[in-house]
Image 1: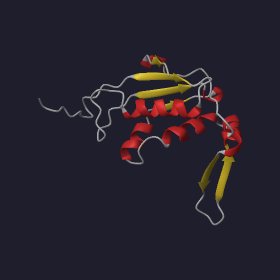
Image 2: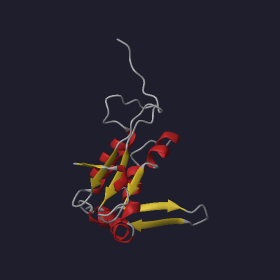
Image 3: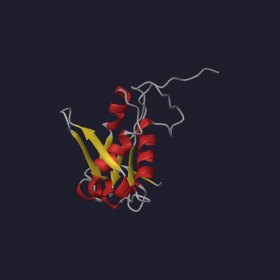
Length: 142
């Protein structure tokens, strides 16, 4: 019996919709990262990009459990002296919930060219509407 190796040209990609309403932010991000990488497929290989397209809706209604809203920060550095910036997650969820979800998913995919390619297949929306009906996405239950 021989082992089959998936090739990027032969991979069939599906579209999935994840509804984040009432769900913890990290749980939705973990499921999205799994779908983007293709780890749910039987022919998964870590060196091959065999993941699917993921649409996350209702990010503004995702919840942060515990005291993460007040105690967790998103930090980045501008590159200048004294350029450390930070924003609390409760403020980030109010102003830009799409960014909070994208940063969470980004932390769960590899920091390689493969991970950046997989992140291009992620679409994040704060509300319930998205403009990808032509692709006939399937609802994915968490």
